[in-house]
Length: 111
Length: 114
Image (cartoon, rainbow over all chains, first blue to last red; front, side):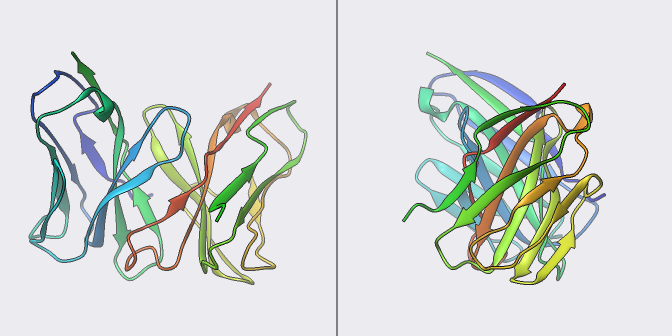
């Protein structure tokens, strides 16, 4: 099936550092979304991107929709302990109603 | 609003048993989906629905059945559970997955098949 390749798989950083993660695919997506999942909970939407080239911020988070529509990245600036969790990218595939998720980036933040 | 409600939160089944995972939303969303989450695999789409009476297969539909008789409910049925179906299952709903910022997720059902 369709896959979104998300990297890195995991990150261990110190509080205050910046973080960058990305998603790539061989398919074109109409929408890119970034979610965060806390332990024992469902994913929660962080940022939604709707146009190629779009750059959107939400507090310390910034995400971009790649020009080719086949990739996206998420940056977190000045990380804090509550940033710990699993981050997922997700894309709406072409003109379908399916939302496909990446494999996730597990983030650990040390004080 | 309760959002997306999944029951049960935990379940242990024996191989070959059947069960239904319940999902209900009170946001009048047309779109609903079921995902399973396995370590290192992310969230994989099992089945989805774009409205009452309409369902379609996702990436990993084998072994699962769904129906959508009402807008509010989207149950997932395991007809004959297998150990490979041990996973965390998430139900999600949306007004429009692409245009309105994706899905709202339930808190999950952790299923173990022994």
